Amino acid sequence: MNFIIFLDIDGVLVHSNSQLISQRFIKFDPKCVAVLNSFCKKHKAKIVMSSTWRILKNQAQLKRLLKKEGVEAKLIGSTDWGVYTDRGKEIQQWIKNNDYNGDYVIIDDEIFDIKDFISKEKIIHVEHGFEQGGLKQEHIDEWEKQPP
Image (tube, rainbow, N blue to C red; front, side, top):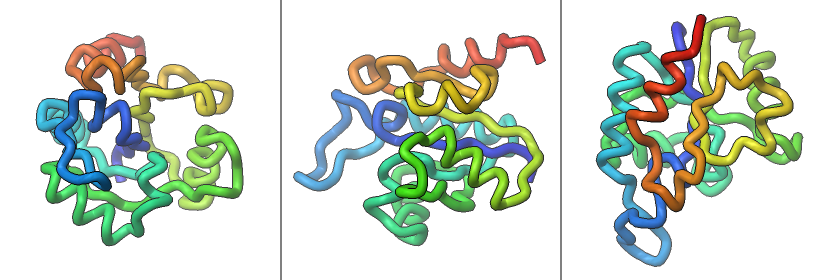
């Protein structure tokens, strides 16, 4: 594995203007998905789900959902939940449990429970993503401008 994205969904791929399909499902924004797909292709990235959606759906359901919504990168797992109250710790634990020493980034709109555990260079912060349209190319560009 070359590169992993720890992915949030709400505020990243789904936002306040996303299309409501039913009372139980909101469609991913195709523009946000296109930005994610481009980033994944460029970095040959795979996805680990760190979103609360990992609690609502099992791995097979998440894989089908991502594929149905146009996400091209392979889902290889999810962080554990319930063990820690902070997603930053959950991500650190996934890295340790999977003996992963490659590169990674976290794409999330809320980083209050991440930023104390993961360096900011590893975070693409989609600030106010739910209110402001989710993941955009400008978020990627800002992260990629950081010095290595």
